[in-house]
Length: 329
Image (cartoon, rainbow, N blue to C red; front, side, top):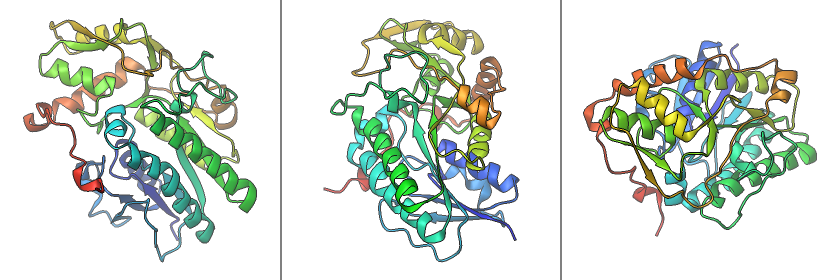
């Protein structure tokens, strides 16, 4: 009989790709999402699949699933600065209450749980590249602190359940990931650049563009998560691509890839925006035998091709996602 995996944030960018991967591996998948930042279009192709079931639910509320569950992947969370600055309390709640609910469910079901942590636990790092031993440089009361601290608390709570209850837990510290199904107007640099290039607008670079990022293609990331879930390692593991590039150089790459001649415009750097971000993946190489395979040029080409398929209504959508129905007065 097939094993069952519950994936929260299933309608999101990473969650939807994980649904695809686990179905392809022969699992029965229960997807859960409240669509606060997710999009039903990301999982529409799965609704008629016999191995897929969907539950629309907010994980910060009690989760009641009668059937057996073997694995849980907790990927429910806003992940874009624009999102978590607009819904800061919901961001904190999904990392705290949501994680608590899912750890409790894992305990009740005797299931193994993997949580999606983030490179943001390192804040604006003073160590470069960042290894799992680095404690981070985070402003807990800065505007981005709602996401950073939610994820740091999530890690602490997960380790407490592991140590106190003996729960089988895994922690993935995910660095910048990209690919098809990213939301075009979520404010992150890749969809922002690609959307601007396709709309024939100048690319917006914040600061002088000397800040760095390291981008991992989604197929590589899902492979790393899959291997981590079935490993025996319980402490956090960095998953990302260490191929680092400055934002200014990256903007030039996107201009060339999209044959855009609109150039670049500069704006002030946002508060607490990390100046450097590069994973040390020595641990993932050692315990998971995992390294990213997809080169940035190849992955960006696939991602741009995806964005080219979007209807004009999405390509030219100016308004950010409406969160009003998710915000309690």
